[in-house]
Length: 275
Image (tube, rainbow, N blue to C red; front, side):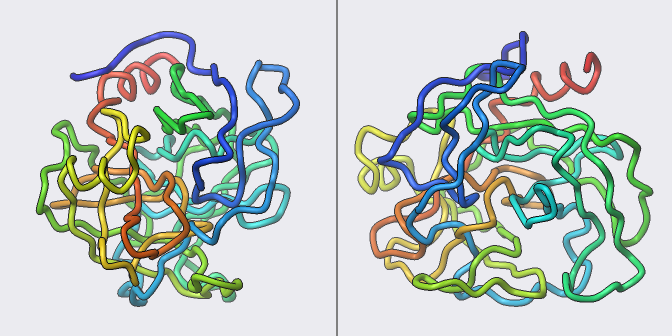
């Protein structure tokens, strides 16, 4: 598969004040014992939520995950096996501080479908570059397998890359507002088209790599945003994208930027088999 490599999963470099990541953080600061910088919270543009989407039909996205970090809501993710979740590399925190929440819809209620599972390991893609937010891709291993049922199901990963004009769905519990903060109780969804590489590069000159693509609306008004980082972009029933970054949220001329899952197809298999 294109761009797939094997090797040590944890290596990052730099930080970039020019990009706005969608997990309410910037990956910079003191180094962890694994050589991975701890992600340090910092003021960001309002950029990691679902803006002007709609409440997802209850439990229609059974692969949807959100993480809490030391008890606080953090990033999103996608369950791909009973034991493994895909998220964004910029969402990295020490595994012992992360809890994965599965089977959720209304986060204010105990609905009987929830599973809260401790994270055991987290592997950023080994070429992750925090300065450019490139290779913003991470694999997260649960300490115990999720119990698969009607409310918790894995999503197939895409082996092909997204194509211009495809309609996809992004989901999460991120911020609902372009200014100020209003996090939803219920899981939010938004239908978005995949944009052409040329329009993506025009929106973000010299910032789009072969590992990224844009989806959303150039006219603004609808987007993913703060808190949605690491979450799924689903096209044709497969995981094609990971919520990564953007300039603000839902701003005219600045669509959401997503990590291409297809690039990491072989690496995903390698991590699952060997870690």
